[in-house]
Length: 260
Image (cartoon, rainbow, N blue to C red; front, top):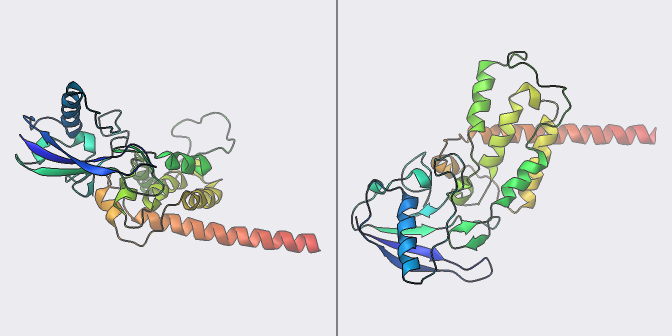
């Protein structure tokens, strides 16, 4: 296969970027998309040129590091497929393919196709965990969990935090990511003691990072490689509203007690 690549090249977040044209010749259709980039980079290095910087790690579709916008779609043309699991047989000989980084204010460009997704780490640090002391680890069957809740928690836990939802959203919202993390713990008994506090703190951190608001476009679900449903956003909003009202009552009651 021979392809023409339009690749976004940018030195860092402060430098202007531009598209640069490259020819990817003699590419095997059995290569993954990242393997094709490896081959291209080897040829660039041989010519003394700067290789294209792109993010990757496991290359097995489970870590979320490989995110690239391909022809305007996060992760490329195949549904529920990460960039590293996308194979060149998904394209045709002679195609022109455009590669861009995730584009969001909260994801500044580090170099070329690599963006800084540490905003996601800070959202998790704000509440995406269980810290309530519960003693030693109980037996796996000691706490009954309804199958419906276990299934929802598992579905939410499949989120790999790649950021495709942000890249695809017209508002650059991180709502699907945050909703998945809140739902994962909120559906399990161990997550109940901190459920309301978790919703407040993680949503507040999402806003502080500069992500946009959700306006129900649904593009996030369409590009999510794990198929996380937008219904989880409704669950997050319900927890957030309930937590806000509960917090308001606690503040009012505390004020009355102080005044009394």
